[in-house]
Image (cartoon, rainbow, N blue to C red; front, side, top):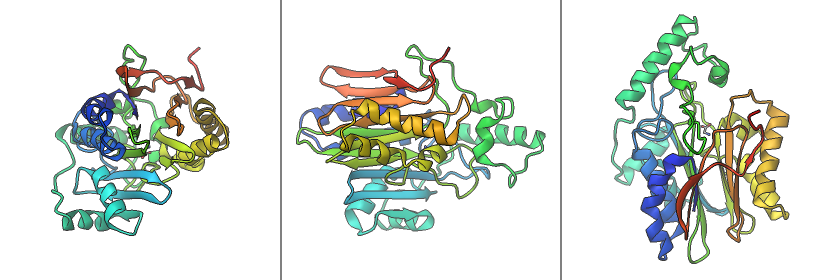
Length: 318
Ligand code: GLY
């Protein structure tokens, strides 16, 4: 089992014993997503995530077993466990994606509990950000969330990356929890869950809930999940591209390299703009890569659970 960022370690610790002794891959990836969604210290997923420009939370998620079996929800505003909700879309409907009020109503109909998704800390971060945006004469309607990351951190102090951890991880508040697992029966599953870009325009949806962009799983090619700036990932169908590369014979390392090089070439990201991607081949071989230093991967395998830097970083620090 492989997951984005070190904050996934708690979920991997919960899911691993069951996965190791015969539990299903889909249960495992949903456990990891659920733990991040409930963790108020993770400011990019579930409760604790940062809201949109008008201070409203909206969550996106996707689960995937194969091109024929996936489920997704976007812009959920009243329910926390959106990866589970995406799974229910997959298991209980003939659709792939439910959006907004329709997704929340579906959750209501299934008896999922409603809750306030905006934490006190996230509200404070939004208020600080709003004060900074106002002082630079940006209005709510005028903020282009795609440009937030090109602003100096003085505009949005809460967006400054944290100091690097011992493994070099620099957490930025824009990080999907993405997880891929293969169970003892050989079934591969993936899940991702996010609150999206912090202070995004109302209605903005990124890559995470869209099969082929933030996540893709095809037992014949492998699985991939991306994290970081969704607009870049969507522009190159990042996860599909990684899986397609593996289907055509690339190693997971070459597949993540191809995705990141394509993003670099087409989007020309700024130095601090991050995309990370993890990829697993059907035989279990895996790799991870990122545009710039600071990404981390949690890996759960026979020898234990650890957080490591990705194998490939496109722009190494000089
Ligand atoms: N990668 C998450 C997002 O851009 O919404």
